[in-house]
Image (tube, rainbow, N blue to C red; front, side, top):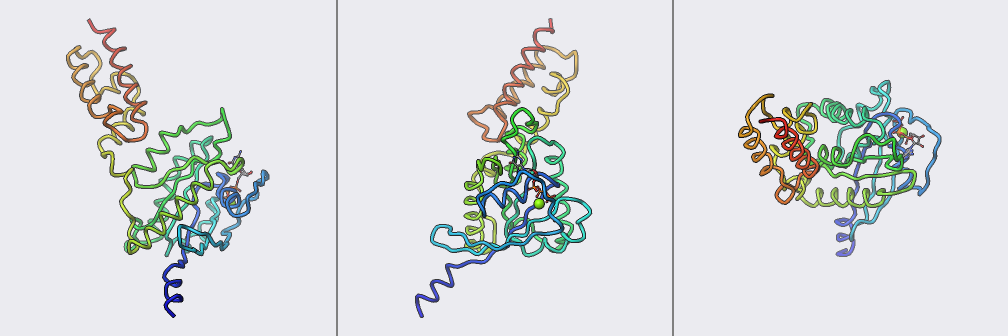
Length: 270
Ligand code: GTP
Ligand code: MG
């Protein structure tokens, strides 16, 4: 009797769903993990694919119900009812397709809308897969950009390739572990150390620097301003973003860009 009760406590049943634009590789990422194989030919998911797998996480056996969603917008009507009662979401984009990265916000919005005003996205584990990292030169979304998007929201982030298998096992293991932690924590997402170790100001500043149109814009000063003003603006950013102090993804690149912007501006100011 005692043993039986113990086992019931240990086994766990969870629901996870996949999200992301059509053709980014959602089905292939799942297939690579569950069936250890890759199919190069594109077979669009029609509506939803459903599967069950058992995985062992630490001392737990967990039964995972996977709902692999179709990315095409015309399947919206089929997808929308599957968002509820989910513990984990695999959000996938293709690193060679900027649009699929930009669409992540829209996927979150669709889910939020379907869950309605009483739905709670805080207590779901999200993992972002930057997929197709085998694509080499075609890559246009860099790691720090994806990582920043994910980690600033408290999401996990992994670089994956369903083709080569890189990152896949690690991603699923970490994802399932986080879901087990969530269930043990009374269904609340535990605070991750990553999302705790940098501030919103740092994240916003890195994003602003990445999108700035020139060196003036990057330092946040008006064209034609004085050396003093440039140095002042530079020092403020340097303190905020110095890689020794700032753990946010992309801070090192942003810091370097700021150093270069200052050098370039000072060269031209008498
Ligand atoms: P929908 O079901 O339509 O939403 O698409 P999906 O996101 O499930 O994409 P799917 O897994 O069917 O993969 C789309 C195409 O990308 C297929 O031709 C795959 O072979 C290819 N693909 C998937 N993952 C990878 C990868 O990591 N690298 C490369 N090179 N190709 C991949
Ligand atoms: Mg699919």
